[in-house]
Length: 504
Image (cartoon, rainbow, N blue to C red; front, side, top):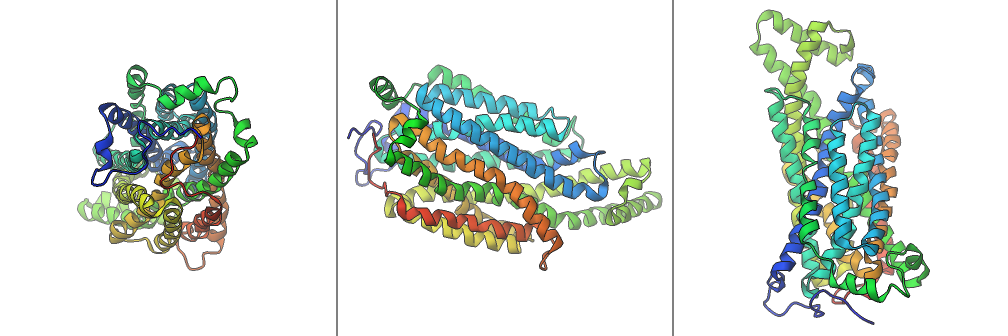
């Protein structure tokens, strides 16, 4: 069996030599380009997660009664998320195949251009319908980038450095997520002083900037030698990027189906549960922040304005603010901006805390997987994700929990994604690596696309049957945590790839 393991087939690090010492200048260039592609990809994802409630509120304004607004925001936010994930899955399947057929670098360039342009278009949305459509198109590009990026890194890096480089690639995605949270925080503060348009629209405009990276890829990045060789040698007998070959070969079919089940645990857990943590803290803190902001303004205002504020606050509590006068409605809008800025602080801090933990969890997965093996590390991560997520959704209320419990949850949940970056490329040969990796990672997203829709049903159930919980999002999140245990069922049937070269 021929093995392609980058520039060095030695799969073990020389004693006392750190992995990054094995990299040449070109290795570093490839790593930086791939890392930026995935970093910006994750920036777009997180911008969407953080902008989703405000975008839904503005796009639904005047179309939904005040008493029904909170439920409508949640419902349409879930629908937009499902549509986005479905686009992600579709793009992943198509561009994953193209990554094997036309090359890693060309495909990466196309995916970055697509998700950048369509993120910018999201800023121009006028209704929940065109917003969801733009998110679907964005998902097409986002979905294709991951498999192509990890295949590129896996084939270019020296074999001994490969798992560490892939884990680092995934860990740096946390930088993209944290950047999105800082953008959200900065715009929340700026909103109090006035902005030319809604903060969420500006966030999506910023998300269009990564298109510039595609120019660098076009000019400087070369195709990996492994892919170039496979594209010539296999052209006559074996088709590159063929789903037919992937499923007609028993070994690759087994790896694809079991890898899919493994990926579903993390992907559904992330999009169906974890990415609703900022929404949970917003829901928990919204009444407290609203009361505090109104109390502060009432105390600082003259009698006439103070009475208006009290009247507005009473209408909000009674959910009858639709009947307020035009003058009170304008005053309420100014108060909403102050409340929004405070809530942006909480949600941004929650996202930052999650991704600080995620950074260390993802890099730590790569290190631990090299020491004890891929499968044991996955088992630890899956059980830990289940445990901490139940705890967070059961208890999350105060700032200290954002600082302590949320980073631990991010550490556990997001470590799984470093596992996918390291492990999935090791399951498939060069001619099917991008296709197989993309199948596992992105078909899981078709399943994940139903996660938010399932959450609508589960949340609706818990709205009627609270079981002592004030926020139905809490029991809904806990009920869905069982998805983390699904991966445990397939681990025994997958191969251990620690210390083995890439298959060919």
